[in-house]
Amino acid sequence: MISTRDLSALPDIDTLKRLMQSMAMLDAIFSPEWESRYYSFNSKWSKGEQMGSMRDGCGDDLFALFTERGCFLKGFAHESEMTPYKRKPKSVWPGVVDRVPSAFQSGLNQPAFDPADTTFCIWREYSDTAWQRGEIEFPKVPPRFDGSPGDRDGSISLLAPYDGKPETYLAWATDYWLDDEEKGYSLTLEHVQRVYDHKPLANAFVAAINPARTLRLLAADITEIGYPRRGR
Image (cartoon, rainbow, N blue to C red; front, top):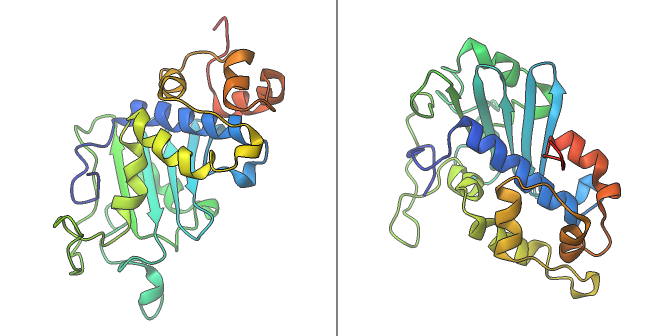
């Protein structure tokens, strides 16, 4: 179980970036409308920076900024015990962002990331051997149903999709995308694994997932995400 209290199962920087690109590519195959997608990735966010994100449409989100130095990631779970909205005046929980390295200050100051709405923050430079977080005194919350520690900052729920297992995306997509039988969507573990492996897309492959999508229609998304093309 990934959380800010145990980040050992979170992939390394480059593996996480590839994973976020893959999840964004799968979502783009399902939906032409960016607003309907859960996962997105912008490989041309700004000079020397790339950005991966997750928005659940219910107020929770996650942003990852990839730079030449490493990765900065912040999340916001609006119902968590550490939401800034439970503090008066509103403020990020003590310690969450206090030790973010200067290399990632652009992430802390990025308006698109809503820095004031933060319940957890982690980072990793290429010189680090593990993911880092600040010194935090976590609030006490009841244990989860399985006896594990409660999700104080929302990191358990928001980081769970990034375990790198195709089964995890498939289980989520089955509920999120495949519940509308009229659209003819289909997704198998082999489909997800192929995209997780960054194999170039083919029209037949895309149509097998969503008959309404083609490589031509996906061209702009493939470019933005930075997903591999045939012949490259």
